[in-house]
Image 1 (cartoon, helix red, strand yellow):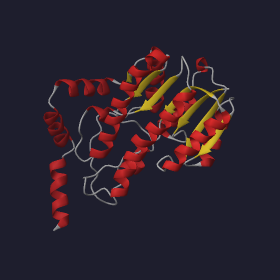
Image 2 (cartoon, rainbow, N blue to C red):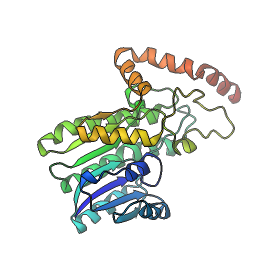
Image 3 (spheres, helix red, strand yellow):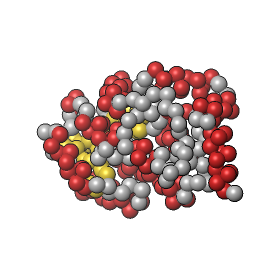
Length: 268
């Protein structure tokens, strides 16, 4: 049985990856993973393919073994894996609770790695992997430090993995969206009445278009996918300019010096 596995499929980019799943992949069943079982089951109405809902919290390591045990039991041929689970939290390094900071690392990095490695033995020639990174992966970002660093890991890991898996005929594409209109911000920017870190969004892209471009780049075998002129310009600038300058521009753009001053005053 040929299957696709999509984590974070209940919302945001993950849900759009599910919706746009191309017939050319030859998928016979879709395994969807997220915390909400009801949201996962609702996906069945959006496709003619059989959908297997796997309610799991991938930030918990035991779920990775649960997933591997299911693969061992079913012995499917995984033709497509999309790791879309992840979250961000914006704020100073001392503002964000340790559990939240480590949660980003666990879900964005450790879970992605575990799901990938558990899936690879069930993938053959022609299989494809899509990993959701971010334009944030190209630069250090003050006040979004852990999230940006976690996405840098995803980008680096995915590009190296793409190179390693070429002899097996498996391709890996790291998708690096710019600001994209999803429920991501509900958790990322919530500040309980405080001034948010991000006050200026240079662009806010449509997830439908981001994923459409991602699938096109996946088909071409590209190791990185970026949608939108601003996203490509940002990534290019981060290659050319010193990161110290990039961070200075970011701080000025978001008026983070004023943010720092407000935080200091609140501590007095």
